[in-house]
Amino acid sequence: MRVAIAAFTDTGELLGKQIARGLSAAGHEIALQERVKGGLSEWTRRAFLLDAVVFVGACGIAVRAIAPYVRDKFSDPAVVSVDELGRFAVPLLSGHVGGANPLAREIAGLTGGTAVISTATDLHGRFAVDVWAAGHGLAVFERERAKAVSMSLLEGKKVGFLSDFPVSGRLPEGLTDQKAELGVHVTLDIRQNPFARTLHLIPKTVTLGVGCRKGVDAQVFERVVCAALEAQGIPLCAVERVASIRQKQEEGCILAFCEKYHLPFCCFDAKELQAVDGVFHRSAFVEQTVGVDNVCERAAAKFGTLLLPKQSRDGVTVAASCRAPELDF
Image 1 (cartoon, rainbow, N blue to C red):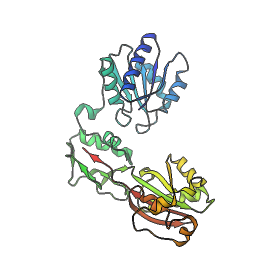
Image 2 (cartoon, helix red, strand yellow; image 1 turned 120 degrees about the horizontal axis):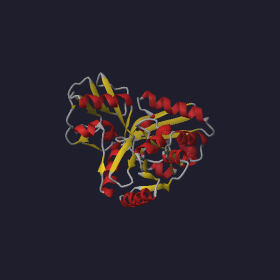
Image 3 (tube, one colour; image 1 turned 90 degrees about the vertical axis):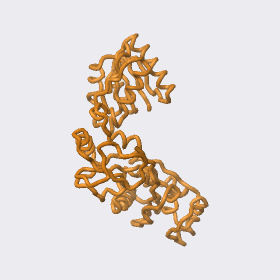
Image 4 (cartoon, rainbow, N blue to C red; image 1 turned 30 degrees about the vertical axis):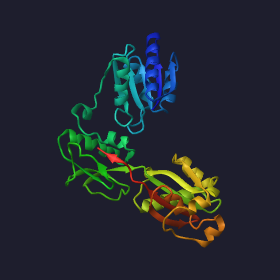
């Protein structure tokens, strides 16, 4: 985690330094640490760009500081308030998805204090779907249904579970592989609804292999790529990278797409792509032009099993592959 730590008094500053040393030793990055004497709102705005924010002081100070920046549990950083004697570490925001609960426990371990956990699933020892999803790199597609899953489990109702990928371990209490009205489906295809109300969990395991004519408009490129994914029921949140041939590493439309969706762009030489095993749609024209018979499928297949064969439209080619996620209970 990239952590910001704010303190407001001499005592709080000393404890903040102790917490920083302990978190650093545990592998966290202390990206921002200050004794804040003024401009707390601006400090908090910058801190909210990180993964976690720790306030050493009164809870009220922290609550007022974060109020303008709170959005939702799926995008807010973990926020923990620690009194300046280190007696109590209180997760204030994003206890599950952002990891404030385990961070509070970690801080309490460093200060000899107590983590004050208030989330219901933790208190009752129930499966927390948002925590499990976050721990396995799964995007929660219907966020409102995550709350419904938690409520059903707390009420003692059975919640269905289905995965298109292998999952090791036994189903947690409350989940069932039998028929249920509400259920969780780990899948790359959001068109599939095995339950009357389905919460789709999406693995971020898809690689887009792309190619295009020189100078293709960025909007055209995005439209073709998104349409190809949509036709297969694959949401954009499943994409973990974009790949192509070295000659396209400065192509404006591809770079714009990657910047917009915060995706890394990997490029390979023609020889590297030609060496990829598989059966691909060959093009003599493409081979004559760039030195390899297929760019998009081979670039995608560098990272997994081909999921979407070559699609071509308006000067853009796109293919997709996926790797199997590692899932366990």
